[in-house]
Image (cartoon, rainbow, N blue to C red; front, side):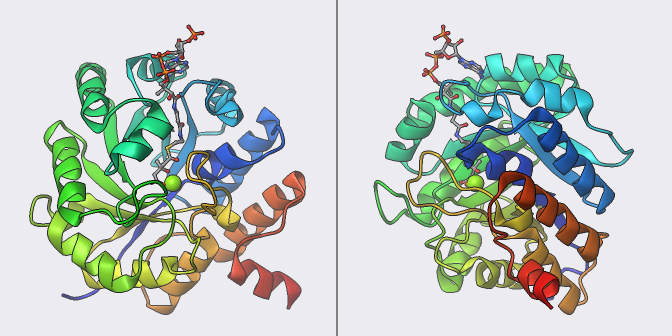
Length: 299
Ligand code: HMG
Ligand code: MG
């Protein structure tokens, strides 16, 4: 299989990143981050989520963030929605693309969204119907695809089955989430081989948290398998509130640096992306999780 010549990076820092920050974050700072990312040339930004504020307080202001960002033509600004209530809030906030999320692990599904995998998929059916009626595209996530914080190893066939259900109900793309970052390249390739028996590879995305430092290797393995969409988080922000010890997604800057080196096109400006990461890190008073940003800024 030849490497893709073009990759779409799905920037999840404002959602997956900021959802896990400890201190309160002002709406203005979230807006600034999204605007900086737009300016850096990202074509897809996950801006926030419409989940219970009791479960994830950091995402409470997502509607205001959507109202205040500067939208650029051709850029997708998406919101995460766990159920119809979240979908309706997203619609009201002017969101034109949403993401639903299921897990490949029963225990994680209970901890994250308080229901079984089957119940979560059932909840998505009315979301899909409402989305179709309003001409909204829906992306799907499967969590814990390479390991679960509660159940340990996960059978790739179970991931394939949940992913296939999401695809069958109308998700145009399914992002495979290594929520706790335990996956390694061989396991990643085997996973993609199993899932792609049910969903075309061009409909798959990789979502790697970098807890064990394997994310770039896993992205490279996925590229070799023909996957051309990857989720990443500027400055490596974040983690998952329901996966203890999970660090942020792989840093967007580091993925971009690797893709640039491979001659793969993304349309993203590395210097502007680094500046976006530096700004949010200094606003949050946290260190930058991108190795490339460290190398460039300290050089
Ligand atoms: P529940 O308590 O079972 O919900 O939570 P419920 O239907 O029984 O409702 C209870 C209360 O929540 C009610 O309010 C509802 O109105 C409210 P009350 O009457 O008590 O005042 N509620 C909502 N409020 C706002 N927005 C909504 C909503 N729905 C109900 N959409 C629920 C179930 C799914 C809501 C909850 O568990 C939840 O919000 N979970 C979100 C968890 C989350 O956001 N996790 C992080 C994102 S997933 C992730 O990071 C993984 C990913 O990155 C991929 C990877 O890394 O693998 C995507
Ligand atoms: Mg995640």
